[in-house]
Image (cartoon, rainbow, N blue to C red; front, side, top):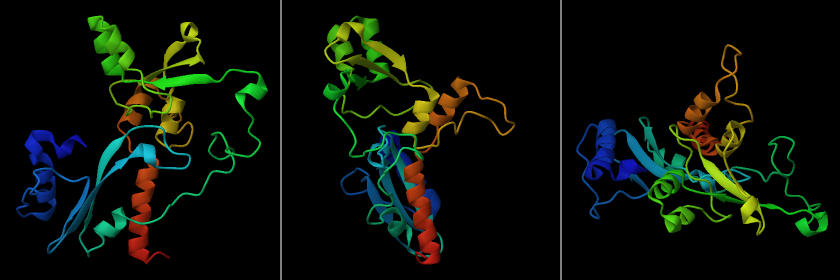
Length: 236
């Protein structure tokens, strides 16, 4: 989403102009909206900012804001493709296919199991490291998110970390990196999607993290591809 503001907000304007081959005026507000369109002769262009944490069922627990742009050279369907009403995903009734916890009626509380449930706190890696280097204890603690917060955006040049501990047992908490498998889940990808190359050889974890950090959240991509398919087939 940095393209909306980079280079004094002129970079995104350059993107639009490269598709339309015409002069695009800046918005009266001086800022690009999170969703909009340019309609003229051809092509028909629409854009929308998607945040991965609001997509998929179960939802992806990752804050990942990316701009998606549709350019329709054959009609005026770009806005319709990006702004389809209604949900595209069925509720997950079993964990067999997704390998994630099912939301069934047979759940019991942690109290009934006699076990403590770990409390997970995702946090901003760079903020944490910067404050740790400066010895800023308050800033370091402030880098820890709430248990209900989504994970920060997965990056190609860094591995996301998080902390966990049993309720009120802070002294025995741990900080660890997300595994490649957990990162795949946060992107909505099948388990092991990045584990092997086309030659069948196993891919190093560092390369997997980099690929995932450069990837698109799958539910967002599926939404757009389905919109394109519906536009071409009339929804059949």
